[in-house]
Length: 515
Image (cartoon, rainbow, N blue to C red; front, side, top):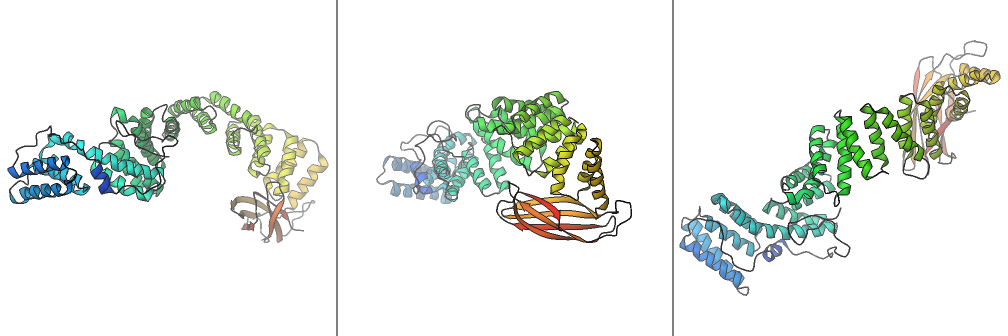
């Protein structure tokens, strides 16, 4: 996100138009900005600062002269500071709001923001009714410093921006932009605790009608942080504010994301009807948002509206594999949802589409076999089981599925061959993991000893063996392979198996018995 401060009216963060990017030059120093932000005309304070000692009055006169005499300003300001300091330290004016107010004004013209802040704090404490008068001098200084920090953020010069934003945030707290900028910097530094605190201050400073957009942004950031921490109730409260405060034109993306996140939290809180309503708003704004449509289907199902959920999922399923944005993982989720509802035909359609997009997706192939089993589609179950046997010949479920498919189709010879193969199998191998990181792939499985026997039913003694784990690319070609020894396991005994391989483009695996 890029930021800027509007030149007119209330300070507001927005995206700069093309051609308005700040030049990548060294900004003015903080003292230079503070000095340049001060008024060039003298105005009599409009609030009651209390009685005026003659030295304080003299200091005020010096300030007026300094404002009106740019040539000798520094010298006159020095006289003003000297007289006012004497009044405070020697003449009993330590509790004079007038003295502290003018000391604050002197410090600003000298570019000393820390001294100005301290003096104004004292003046405001002694004359609370002058808060608005003092704010008239705080705000322009804050605006100049905040703008410098925002310009640097636009140029991705965060470390340089930070001192300006910190100075601004510490000097004036009635508007949110400096706080929001510091929140952004904390996020960039992955300091989430600091980010939340800065955004909290931005949120508190945005409680005005003309700052709704800033309030929406701060609320969204805080709500998202609470969501990541598992604090559901607080996340819902802030995300609701973000939705209510977001400008539907200028903050369309923020509104959409806040609605989506709010719905996720409502799902977590057991409020699926509310989640469905908010996700419905996201879909209405972005009909092609696949994640929102998937989430809406899940929320509708959880709210007891399964027919509406299925209608959405069917639309997603029809769009899959047509060059649209429905990913293989999204279609896989649709298939799993359909399978759980025993909609085996829809599940099979989904898993088949996953395989069309990712031919080496073993999980989709396995789920497809289960779907055909649910449909009693023995021909397709047999075809799918045969494909799986080429990937993992020692999988007990796959072998049994192959046997049943052949039996149901009255393929006696093939059924007997498959049954004999299963009887003789010394171990069952269950693959538990497969990971790819860069060019390196790892594979894990567990081998469990079986009571193997011959075709005639005679027991076979446990026997050691070797399998070859092959790592495949997207086309199914072998990139690399490794031998894995399997011990002579008694029935029920287990052995952890693992293999690793290095090569470009590894995406899948298979194994076979080493002849």
